[in-house]
Length: 110
Image (cartoon, rainbow, N blue to C red; front, side, top):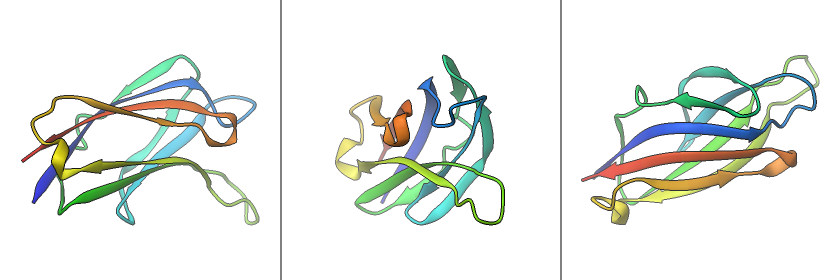
């Protein structure tokens, strides 16, 4: 077993053409944390999302929440963390679907 600790999310470019994105994470099929409003050139501290236990891999998906009956939330991208990263310090991954550009920083604790 390993523990995933999210550290920060930085937005270089939003997925929405106007205004902020309202983003949230789904890790191994389960939404974690809340929805965060984020705009271009802004970072968010995610250290409150720190107790995600997993076996070998954790699939981390980032979504932009959309409103409206016929407007599904947009998947911005996906990265995979692994238990083999335990003790290797901070890791980063990119989310860049739909023209967005986000960088996630995390660490794995054994």
